[in-house]
Image (cartoon, rainbow, N blue to C red; front, side):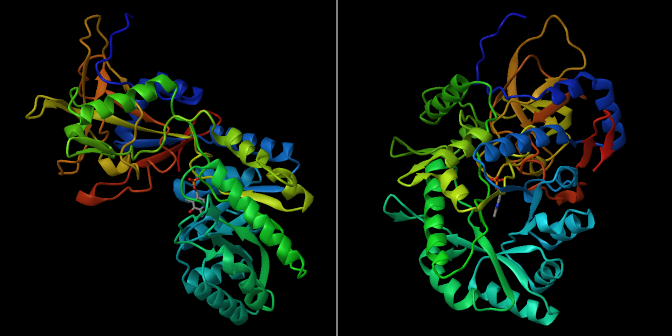
Length: 467
Ligand SMILES: *Cc1c(COP(=O)(O)O)cnc(C)c1O
């Protein structure tokens, strides 16, 4: 095929081989639409295990005792919980039903951690009675855990969530956890003396994706642990939460070009590349470009295992972070959500209509709504794959926006204008890749009484099973 000059910046996603294989059989996909409607999420545990294995290798190369807990809030399917259970890693749970389901599925309670932001009495009872480690966020929670344990005649296994780390002379803001400056006192006065509380370790989860901040938070936590050691308080683990970066994109140049063209478009120096010239965080104020890109950073050279390795190799004046942990026999725990799910899911949908809006933009109506592929940030920035039913030699390249079923002007599935080989036909398949982490489930709603998408798990045998 001759290469066309793309009118709009392309963002070519990295695609795992399972996805390429799956998309080869478009007859099967059409059969699936007949059976389950549209859209459908396909989940594969294969990359999940690869991602886990890569983390494990880094942790072992630093000689660390460890536990990787999959943060299951990032995907509601049971596919990944079962894979975690079967391959000996842990699960981080954030609600009653997440915890209950993990226990029902037979995940080892020793490998479950409860980090829920809100923990009502029912949830605390479930955790304490199953001896599940509870990460404590605040004083009221601590009191209630103690009370629940007392009533059940048990001890509660706890970790203390901490925040307020100092980085470059400022405290990092967080609404979560105890301020690190108060933790020594709380440990000595409140936690250590309690017969109901069995302290195991410390936890933090930092917003953003900074290696430096994580290394500094670890250094400060280790210093705290050393102080506690002087009082004979033993800390068995530090849990560094999630937020390990992933890389969605093939090509850094495409990423840079996109960011540049977006700024030009917002400044009016070129035609819009997003729906209604949405700046995705940029805007013009008094003729000046302001703001910053408010999407996930889709391109990252340092990602997943390399990102973790950089944290552990971070030098302090007493050695690397990894060696400080190892010397003290402190187990390192992590709770990756998005990064374990990298490449683990796709969302497929079907073209229902083609039309032109009042500004003559091509709109492609998909049989899905925007909550079924929804990013908490300003947009999901990967080009979808369009599988045309009939390819002809006379394709006329064009471009357009994908729109969805909610009766909102803003139900635009991707805000970017997408280059197309031709105007898609009714029934053509559109595949959004790498959607398992947060995109497919986190914001899914049932407005208009639309049914939630079917989730199918792709087994080793090639069979598809309802999740
Ligand atoms: C959300 C969350 C995670 C997972 O974060 P990712 O960015 O998906 O890796 C882990 N731990 C806690 C406490 C969280 O809130």
